[in-house]
Length: 168
Image 1 (cartoon, rainbow, N blue to C red):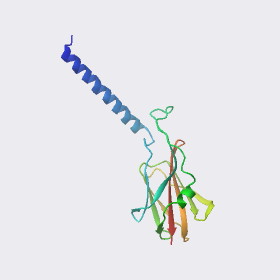
Image 2: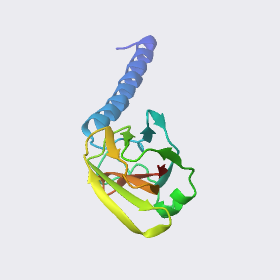
Image 3: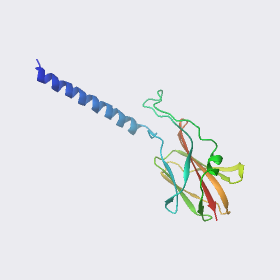
Image 4: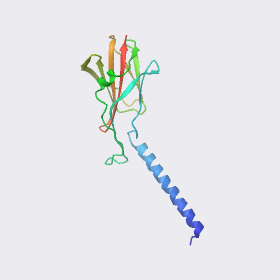
């Protein structure tokens, strides 16, 4: 039989095992999931300097099981073109390169581009995925452009980053 002192030790062991179980479950979920647990940061760089960006629409649901959402965000940002019009621009040279840096690389990236003053016509292209750093080439035609970078991990895990550039 355990004396009073032994019961205290048993309770402490139970608490330690419980904490280890919770931490282990979290680590297991993180290691076995293809999705980042939180909305990843996206940084846009020109000549190794961060450029002004804004978050566009995003949806981020994550869970420990596929049937039980843990958290979520909604699409309340508005059209990317309109967000870009409210954003300060940076100046870049024609045909120069921009770096798109994802905190966690998505399997699918879509790049959309509008010419300022023409919100109806856009170009859209998929760029190489599963990379944390992606490089895109700016147009050779001078003008002002709004870009949308859409990273997609799944139907319920999408993030959009918008930036505006004046190409000279």
